[in-house]
Length: 74
Image (cartoon, rainbow, N blue to C red; front, side):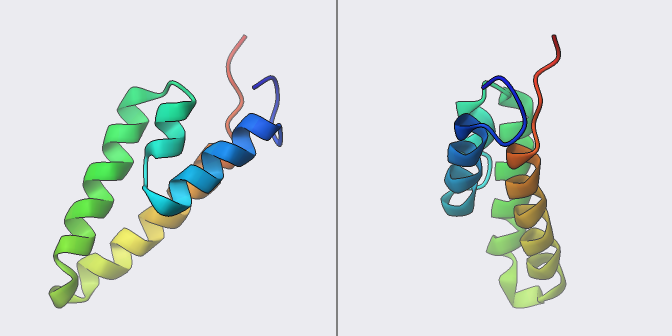
């Protein structure tokens, strides 16, 4: 994954669509993967409160965008 928009970032973004944080794990960013997975899982688990589910959906979207725009520091 050499630059933004590379095939690795696209694969990571696609992984994040299905399981939030999985794309970050593929990129080797363990803390980001845990953060996105735990926050969206808790938010979706509390779907009956509506507000946490909306926040979780927004964080899920941010997770996908974050994986797609990732540039490793050199």
